[in-house]
Image (cartoon, rainbow, N blue to C red; front, side):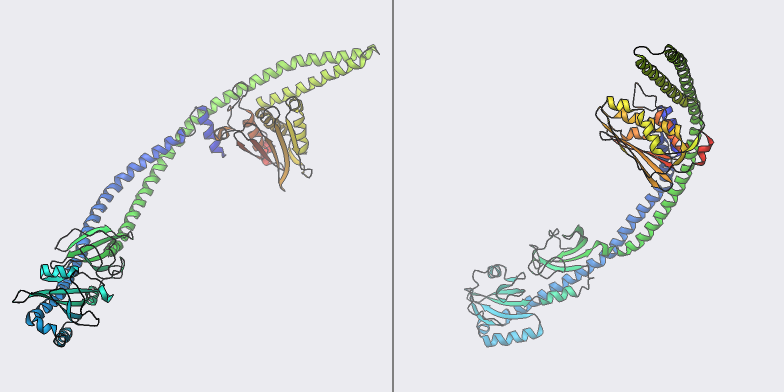
Length: 576
C-alpha cells in the first residue's frame, strides 16, 4: 500500500465514507464531462456518416443490381428462344409430314439427320400412335414399341397440344427434356411427334453469363428442383435448399441468407411459356466490394477523428477532475490530521496517566516486599522461612513484569528513540512468545515453532521488535478458539532479508477487513480493541526498513509475514 493510498484510506475512514463511493464520485464526474464533450462532437459526425452511408449504399446497389437484372433478363430470352426454336421445329415436322411418312423409319431417320444438323441438341425423334405406343423411333436407344399411354407427359400433350417437359433422367439416365406435339388426322385420329433434347445447351447459356467464381446461376422448375447444376446449391434434379421467390414475370431482386449463412442478392425471373425460373445469386460482399474499400477509408477517418476527440475530451476532463480531487484532499487532509493528532494525544495522555497510577502502587508493593525480605533476613531461621522467601520473590518478579508492561504502554503514547543493536531474531521471537505461555497453556493452544538455526544476526531494535511480535501474537491468540494452533517460523529470504511468519487457524478475515487492517482506530474487537495494534506495528516495521504482508481466508486462518533487513535501514537511525 503506497503512502498516497494509505492517506486516502485514512481520510475516508475519518469521514466514515465507504471506499467504493469516494473515488466513484470523481469517476462519475469524469465520465459525465467526458461523455458530454464527446457527444457534442461525435453525434453530428455520426449522423452525417450514417446518412452518407445509406445514400451511397442505395446508389451502389442500384448501379450493381441493375446490370445483373439485365443479364438475367437477356439470358431468359436466350432460353426461351432455344426452347421456342426446338418446339417450332418439331411442330413444323408434324405439319409437313403425314403420320404414314413419319411411321417409315427411313424417312424419319432422314428427317432427324437434317434437323440435327441445323439445330444441335436433338437426341432422338419418335412417332407415338393414338394408343400411346412408340410406332417408329430414331435415336441411340431401343424405344420402339414402348408404351407411354400412362406417362404424365403424354397425357399433358393430349390436353395442351404442345408440351415442354422439365429436365428428367428417364430411360436415358442423363439430363434431358422432351418436346411433344399432338396432331389430328382428317378422320379424327390423333398422334404425337416426340423429340428428346440434350440440356447441355442450358449449361452453355448459364456459362455465357460470365459470373464471378463467388456468384452462381441456375435454372429451376416451379417446384424448386434444379434443372441445371449449381456451384453451391446442388446437382441437377436436387431440391433447391432455399424457398422459391414470389412469382413474377418481371425480373426482380431480393436480399436473403443462403443455407451457408451468406448474405446474398437473388435476381430471378419466371418463364412465360415454360415452367422454369432462372436465378442468379451474388454474395452481398461481392456486390459491396467497392463500398468495402471506401468504407475502410471512411471508418479509419471516423475512428481517428473519434479517438482524437476522446483523447482531447478525456485529457481536459482528467486534468480538471484531478485538480478538483487534489483540492478536496488537501482540504480534508487538514481536518483529518487535526482529528488524528487529537486522538493520539488523548490516547497518549490516557496511557501516561494509567501507567503513572499503576507505577505508584507498584512502588509501594516493591518497597514493602523488599522490607519483608530484609526482616526475614534479620529474623534468622523460623518455620516456613523458605516458603515465605519464595512468596516474596514471586511478588518482586510480578512487580518487575508490571513495570515492563507499563513501559510498553508508555511506548504507545510517546515517540521512542530507536536503539539499534545486533540481535538474534529467533531469540526475540522466543522471548516474546514466553509472555503468552500461560495463556496458551490455559486455553490448550498448540504453538509450533520452526526457527532456522542458520539465521544471521540483524541490526534492529529489540524492544520495538518485541512490541511488533507481541501485537501480532495477541491478534493470533484472539482469533483462534480454545484448542487452536499458532505456528511461528523464520527463514532467510535472501542474503539481505530475513522472514518471520506467524500463522493461526482462527476465524480469518474478509477482503473488506484486510483492506482496512493497517488503518488507525479500525478494529473488529468491538468491545476490547483500540484499533491501534496493527497501525503501530506497520509503522514500526516500516521505520526499521522492513515490510509486512497479511494473507487471510475466512474460516481458515491468517498468516502475517514480516520481512526485516539484515543491515539497519537509514530510516531506523532517525527515530520513530
